[in-house]
Image (cartoon, rainbow over all chains, first blue to last red; front, top):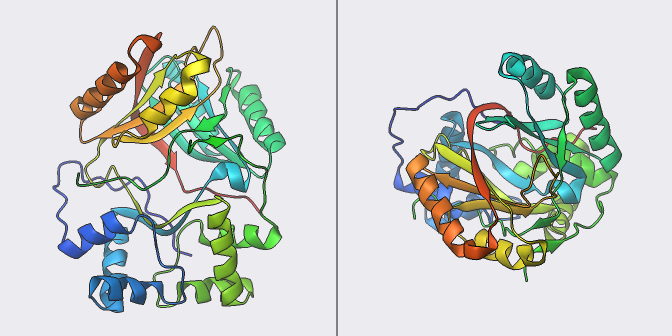
Amino acid sequence: MTEPATTAVDILHAPVLLSALEKCLLNEYQRGFPLCASPYAEIGRQLGVSETEVIDTLRSLQQRGLISRVGPVFNPNRAGASTLAAMAVPEARLDAVAALVSACAEVNHNYEREHHFNLWFVVTAPDAARVRAVLDEIETQSGITVLDLPLERSFYIDLGFPLWC
Amino acid sequence: MNAVLHPRPCRVDAIDRQIIMAVQAGLPLVEQPWDAVAEQLGLDPDEVLERVAAMQAHGIIRRIGAVPNHYALGYRANGMSVWNVPDAMVAELGKRVGELEFVSHCYERPRHLPLWPYNLFAMVHGHNRDEVEAGVKEIASMLHGACRGHEVLYSTRILKKTGLRLQG
């Protein structure tokens, strides 16, 4: 399958120019992708454009890094176990500890944030024991306490994110 | 109340797991993407579609569609706002915060006293920090007297970001 765009896309000062079809695909199809054999043809029917136009436009959005992928967004707590973890890493060690964390296959997000707790990452694994083992391993290797902040309750109904409201 | 209480245990079987691993990095942009997934896995395309529909019905799949890269699209500022509210009120308050348009995730998480007093997390997005600050102010006025402290943690570097990756 195609690899998602990485965060290496740096268009910090470039305006994002989008066609009407691009805006529509970005805003109206964050959810509700047709579950049928030819979904791009179905989207084309809904929008009055060709299947090829839909596929080419999505491909272009992906190549420009404006969408990371087209497909299902999984709920990690239903498909396995996950947690949000935080560490307070001394500035001088931040790059090394961040690299240690990112090297774990179970880590799918790793952010530096402006705070005493400056390293925040999400660990996802098939079960809770494996999640705990990954946190223990990071703690042992770094010698730094890891805060384990698992989701207890979600108040968020994922409707996608309105981009032009 | 739409909040998800105590996520149910894993309901996916080995074949579901294969499908998740095949599509979590994205569907192929070809005319029959599910057929391509089915072929790769040696499954019947109808079975793949049925299983995907079932996973969506059970909440294992949240949504299916284009996954925008907010940063590349100009939403450059994201602040993780964290709030200390009474446990007895977190459900009611969390629901109201989660309904705000600029909030992309809103979760209750455990405190770790004395290091970490916050139990409500709301991710606030904006084109810049001013927009994020305005959103945080709106949450603060909504929580009003119930809030015993809050902070906003801005991300300064994305060190790793991939979709959900289940390991085989």
